[in-house]
Length: 247
Image (cartoon, rainbow, N blue to C red; front, side):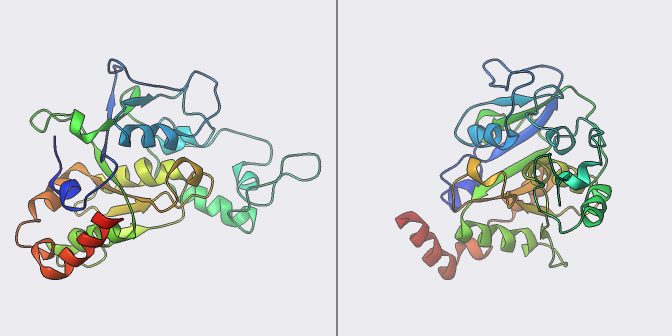
């Protein structure tokens, strides 16, 4: 299907639809079992037109199983994951990532992550153009955007709602921000968009000026249907759109 939002925002990357399935689509790319990698590279490949798939054995890193909904707790490692995320395990071990100041703060972060396990074996990343609007199993849609495009998405997310905090950004791994957190939002009566890919470890797998904006399918439809009559038809946006076109 073609997204009216993607057309209006002049996106260079295809929106990525994410779904779960017990079957691998024909021609889908996937990490080899046991290979190291970041699922954000598969996500990015989908934004460039490829279909990609990941399962519990091919997430590429120990955090990917959590982020992609294949388990609800981190693997047991000496000292706990909180040391890997913060100060490290001490002399003779690899240094910590220093994303949290102390192991205690890191543990609080881990404990607050949504606990979910997919009912189906695979998570599929598809270019939105490759799926049918009439028979669509997608859970989430993610846009890869620059700052001008992000500003429009934030305004559009709030356009038809009485609340004004309908796009959220928080500390999270890349896979948390494109899948785990938006999936948790999809189960709420009034879900929010999640702005993501602020994870420094994941940044090498996306363009330098891009972030993600991920919404549950219902919110995607809401935003698509709200274009007509919105600011996207007004003069101020047209000035910004012209700058995007020149970029």
